[in-house]
Image (cartoon, rainbow, N blue to C red; front, side, top):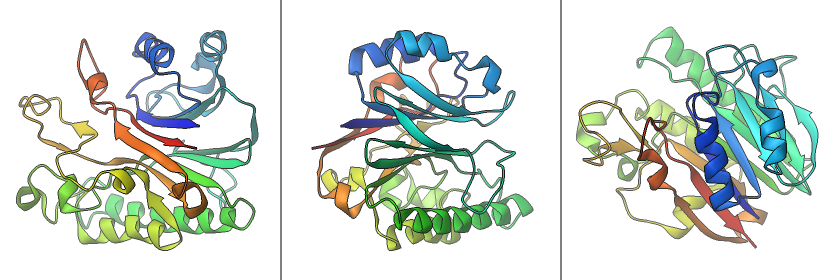
Length: 255
């Protein structure tokens, strides 16, 4: 099974780019974030023609998450476990075969110490509790998405510049680490210990060309799946070309 996660930064704007990438890479499942389209605008028929089934949860112009799969998607849930609804369209989960898959788009947090920052930390705590609850029913579990956290200094192009800033603060890193403490493993780090591997680059100041990026997208896997993770990486090529997303897809393969 090959699974990918991509903050596509507007699905309607980059639909053909997605379809071309699916045809080339043929992943078994894809988690999308920042689809930025309401459910009635989601290109379900076009993706079905490309042999992908979909579950999605969106809103107009902002946020939005989806899971695409070559296999049946069961038990759709478009909210964290303790929520009756998810008005910000930040999480969706479904079961593919015997694997519970979450596609998440974490809040940005705006600035350390702000109300938005405190909400981000609260959201991560809810996510951790939701995953822990899901683990009781699903031993095989994957959490994909844009976490809006660079977990370590090696995930940042200039750690000194970013130290203590949004996405790199100790509080945010601790929130990300809490997911690992309940048994999830960062699949990229199973295979790559080196720095300089990023998934997001600002559109400004030639950040991509200079590789001044952050790794804020990840695929986390339960221990049972982490043991079967045979490869992982970042599809940096998708950050190139005409009008790309500011994120590149991340991916992991399992035997």
